Length: 257
Length: 257
DNA sequence: AATTATAGTGAACACTGTTAGCTCAATATT
DNA sequence: AATATTGAGCTAACAGTGTTCACTATAATT
Image 1 (cartoon, rainbow over the protein chains, first blue to last red):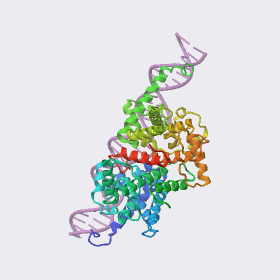
Image 2 (tube, protein in one colour):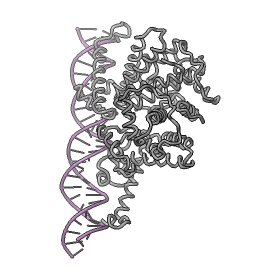
Image 3 (tube, rainbow over the protein chains, first blue to last red):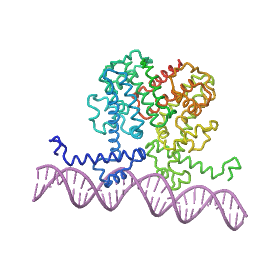
Image 4 (cartoon, rainbow over the protein chains, first blue to last red):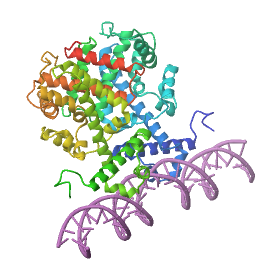
């Protein structure tokens, strides 16, 4: 092993990385053409120019290949939202938030099939997923191994960049103390505070803030999911409709543009 | 053909209907056990006690079997929402609406796999779908042939009973004229009015009413879809969270419970 | 130079959806 | 009542799938 001691990757590792890239590229191509269930291991092998069995030197199974693909997509999505946020000054919280909301949707609808695949694989041991999330909030998402990352919850993964940003700002910049909160039981309060705050944002934030974040997230995610799945009643003027929905949501949070 | 002239179905037709029932039951069982992609035609044949080729006397393909299954599920869902609405007096619009909202979610989350299957097959010629919907609004949904019904839009199918109810009441009972509507372009106004009104509710309703219906529908559908797909950040107290979201939505519509 | 790890192969296994050609019994028709 | 026709069912096969196993070169390490 030359790369574990030296910094530069060995010749073999470069080759390996490249074929992994080819395999993933071929898989993504089939995803675009034939949808999530139309990805065939043998067809990938055919396209890459290798025997079907050879792929098992790179991935444990077709499923794990798809999971790693999903992780790549999450990285792409996260990167896209991060970039569009960073186009605004660090203290312009409103514009950064709007940038995130728009780029999130933008990525999802212009990568529908990828988005579809990301939502279509919830078949992990669900308890494990929760344990993973609430565990330690300091290890960067990008450095987790693919299987662990895939087993994390969609909500957290999708909202990762937004969450990270608000974790960083500690919720300053917006005054959500006036947000109308419904009467909630002790149980729901604790669940939101613990799970959502600990999982997504980080602890010690006011409940009203976390509640606003959660219900806002639910609303955005619902809108985008519907659009990506083709369940939207509006089609032609959907950009405007989306904006109207977002504006009405922000009004609920006491934010006027 | 004895049943086309006489009213009673022939012996053969009874047999046929029964085996169709067995096939569908077996398919649903596999859907529950192994998910939408785990439904195997050969496994169904094995369970029913018949050769795989025999199933092609009853369904054109596995896909069309699944589509017909979906139609059955839509009927179930529609029937469930209708029943819960009819538990309230015909003039108690608020309670009927709440009943629909709750029973819709209730069916979806207690039939997750069925709901999943219903959302997972948008692979039709999409133009056809729209044409089907806006065509004639008077032919009952239940009497359309399975393929046509499956090719209709999810939104319309899911909201069918609610839409039918409001079509019947002509929007009376609620005063949505005060609903805050954003500024909308002529295009969006027309699309909402034409597509949504014509497709779902029936024409000649005030725009504010149709807009309220549409955005309310989007919000409910988003919530339920997220929950069914396991993307909700809240789990243990999700009933209460759902109620809170619905209440806040109704507040936006000027409805106080 | 000998050894070990790795990428790759071909053949096989147990599946899958689908089609073609055939049989046999239940209806319909003459 | 005898005959023709339709329907349900079968077997066998085709083309495709994911996966495993034993085996072979080639590259890297010792």
